[in-house]
Amino acid sequence: MAFQLFDRVRIDDKDVTGDIVDIYDEDGITIYTVQSDKKGHVDDPDAYPGERPLYDCKEDQMTKL
Image: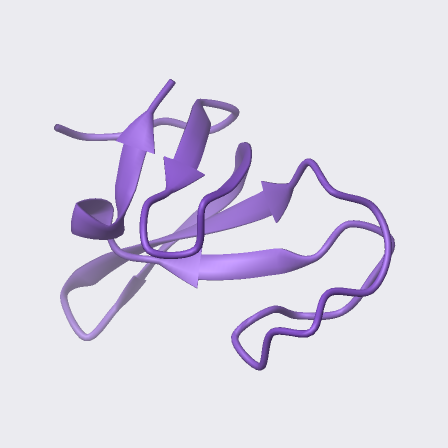
């Protein structure tokens, strides 16, 4: 299943929901940047900090909502 910008998704292993805000290619693999619904700091080394944390995910790590 291919995802598109602004699709609502859940990152399965983190139980994080959010929207896809960027899609890019890294060494032939599509990476999706998901902006979390949760505001503020999260204690997760995989999250990019900010008002709403960002996560980089592969397609098989997400479920479309």
